Image (tube, rainbow, N blue to C red):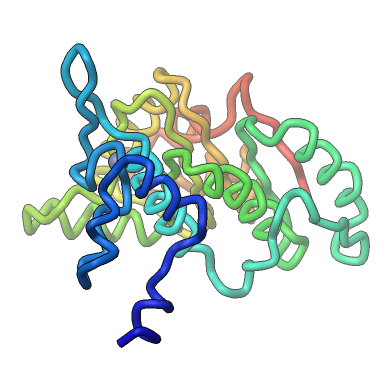
Length: 245
Ligand SMILES: [Zn+2]
């Protein structure tokens, strides 16, 4: 019993705080007491003029968002961390210049196009990691998977696969945009989403095996699609385009 209790003891400062605030009763029972003394674990702190979200609740939500954000990084790219990212000139000669630029401007919109295995995904995921680990609101998808999900939702009334666009700041990470060719129906939905994101000045980071001019032609091979309009929402004055061909 004594041994059991010893293991449950908290660091001295936390224990001292409890004694000072006179709620050390909890030490006498098996109930460890509230972890947060400000809100007694309700998430709401009572103040002189009402109640507000407790800092512990704000911290908890942030921690959960960071964990959820990081969980979607494919294991293959778990080492794609911007601050420690080293150029792989063997994959593409421009990597040193590109990585220096990303480190200098980690919050810009980017369009990475180029041949397979030039390192586009590493650049992409390291930018994602940089933002995601700060707990910002980020959304990532491969375009063909997103299109599948949009299609499925149209016929089944399922949950919306697109993120809430009405937040103050959202970053959209789209991988492999040249591996999907939307139909007219889906393209319209996708275009509206991108258009909204663009108008709200949300950030967009994209990888593509095709350069923007070729991506337009590629999308337009499907009937009724305005490829230029779609690509313009991914590549505009705010976007840095890097070509790794
Ligand atoms: Zn609290």
